[in-house]
Amino acid sequence: MATEAGPRERQLESGTSYTLTNVMTGAPITIEPNTYAVVGTSRYTGSPFQVWEATSASGFWTFKNVETGLYLGHNQDTVVKDCEEIRATTHPFTWQVKQDASGKAKICVPYTNFVVDKTAGHERKVISHSSHDGDNQRWILNPDLNIFQLPIEPRSLYKIVCSKAGTVANLDDSGFVTGHSYNEGRNQKWEAIPSDTGTWFFKNHFTQKYLGMETEVAGKKTRVVGTDQPFAWDIARKYVNGEPCKRNGVMLRVPSTQFFLNLDGYNSAPGTRMHLWSDPVGYWILEKVQPY
Image (tube, rainbow, N blue to C red):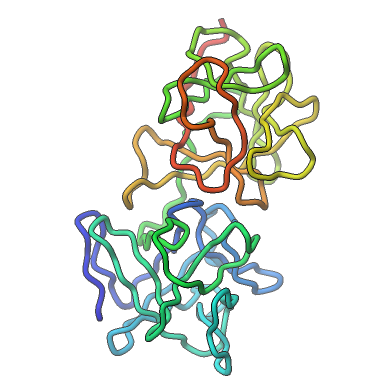
């Protein structure tokens, strides 16, 4: 049951270190430094808490965190059940790794139907869950540990382009952000401002309002609006068929949630609503523009 390499992915090699990045969220499996909890919502920073050494074990695999020496798995006395939380353990826990033709992998509990899962309903946790076809159960095992350079420069102006529709984030007079064809209007240009914590604010060049959400609590279909107060976004690389998507495409996520900026139905009609969604297919291209 050794892994087979797809055309876009190297053979998994024993003794090599990898990041384990979720296909749906673009976030790697991480051990929190203070609690040693295993979480799946942190962006990749190059931290050793996000890097795992793979070791072959009788046809299966173990993943040991290079910083803590702890293993990805379940406690030794645990009977793995559906939605069982994955932990950092002191003992090696063996996994079966199955890669598809595109190089995406399922990380499976041997002799069961459970796989490593990052599900929105379980907040930050990574769990073992019954296998299905969702991308939240597929992982990129990447030996390239270089930090992804965001396609963005502080204080520059950008149009935020939907990969599926080709329209851009447009701040309407109503205060809602909608999809619209690009017309060089200042209400379609957003200044990228870095925060002190690695997130980004996007300030509208015309109104000086920020790309944000309508309510205090993020949820599926929450409207995206212009806000008076700065609103932070996590920017994560988007993967398509096991590879980073074209044109440096990214996803914009509300921090500490599984909700992302999304264009409703990827409809190119002017005025299409933008809202939050938990499993977006499309992604965003940040294209630099001139002020006028």
